Image (cartoon, rainbow, N blue to C red; front, side):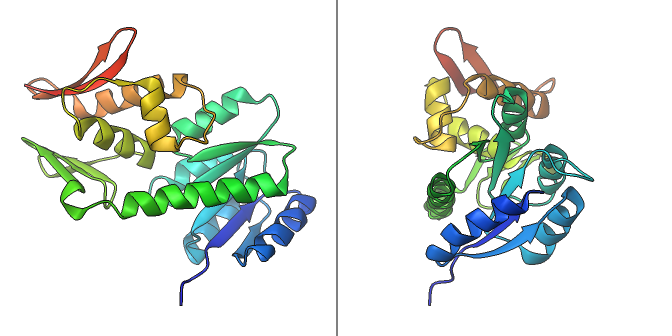
Length: 231
């Protein structure tokens, strides 16, 4: 029997919970509810949901701080819920490792559609051939199966999206990939994101993997995009 996905709803508005529950029940998804940041962290670790809906504005701890804490130990898909016009929250949420965002007010039907899309992408990435899971370049190891990056056997802290971007580029060394290609490959075709978040992710990845004497680099091809190079 196939296990149905479990969704953790994190929002301080009971009306949001009530409207989403009806649609999740119709899809036969199980769900649990958190109404503040601390409760969100607690249930995320206890329930181990398949996906987390995470509102930005919550008491005790805001959603961005919750996302930051979760990404230290968990790669569970996260969809950020943000108020209309809060672009900085949306972009920062993606940079912290969220998989998608939805602007309020939203249709519960749209939320369920986004949940399905993110879960499909997650399942697809997990079903890639095992020989593609681990990439090695001298002392650099990129493992997409357990979302880890190592240099000289030392684990380097990476967000899940940083690992996916690095793995994507490193899977095609020497090939230039545009920002749009990276965005669509990592976040999906249905994602209407800001291309600037790719630049921020690349900057952080470079800082984490580049040092004097390293034989690899992510170079910028101006007006086109980025490529992973090995000397």
